[in-house]
Length: 438
Ligand SMILES: [Zn+2]
Image (cartoon, rainbow, N blue to C red; front, top):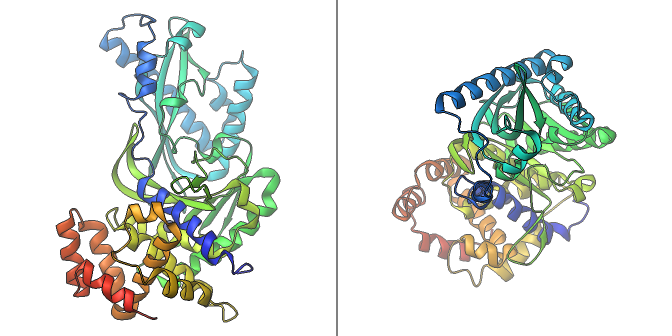
């Protein structure tokens, strides 16, 4: 904590970022089959290249699936030639991008990797450019990174192929990117050459020319993961990927948040789901990546990562914990991690919460409170969790979290679970928190 002043503002910005990552990432994405882009593509007037029968479409997808399977095998085996065999050799820039992609993919150490076709798309402008056999399709990439992903996760790509003789050839690797999952498809391996730095169970991704930064971030990340393990009683093995690249597009579209306040987000946790359909998450959350704001990647402090890693540790439990508990717990763990060092204290934060945020507290902070006044919402949430930990102990606090994260399917269920674990209704809990001095 070199900048105690940041304790308030920086933290709130950070926490809000994580809220966005954890709670709303990948929901509300309008780019689905009925979304604007797809509708525009289909309505743009060009006739379908050829009226393929369903059987022909199935055969085409099956043939491209064979090609995609070969590419996956090539990645796993380190066979660059095999990987590039399906790439249009007449396009040097495409070949160069694919070569970089291959080199990057090799650095991640996949324990499994599959590519397969998902939805095909009519993209008339691509058909015009590449001719009547043009086949644009969303491609799923389903993978596990060794030592990181407990279960396979998936992301999507937009590829365009044409038929040349008996072969399908990749002619575009970004022609239909606008229909893809908004945050998900821009993966760390999709841009410039990266370096992957592993330290313990932490995997850090940086630009290759910033490998030194990667080592620094890896050390800070491992310390942060250990801090979470000290203060969060449920098991978490500390496996996490931290992306700290200069490229701002990686798994992110926005680095500011908060109802027009323009806060700068320092880092966020992006949730991964077991399966993912176009624009919609489905299946249980299986993990997270932490993405660091490119502008702040060189000044990353441990407590910021502690907050995000608390989300990483708790996300797999379930998606239904209330925002005040999700963010309050991350702040609780962060503040305790800071005070593990006898040199540092969060007393200024405590004083601000007591004097500024508690007197007017009339309810547990909800989404609206977070949007309107992030500082206040995070402060109140933190204090609520401090109160609960002091009354219940961290084990029972974790049990409350787990129960809510899985079973809080309605307001009635939420109230019942909270009352069962704490002996208090939400209103009674609010009153107790307001009086709690720490
Ligand atoms: Zn957060």
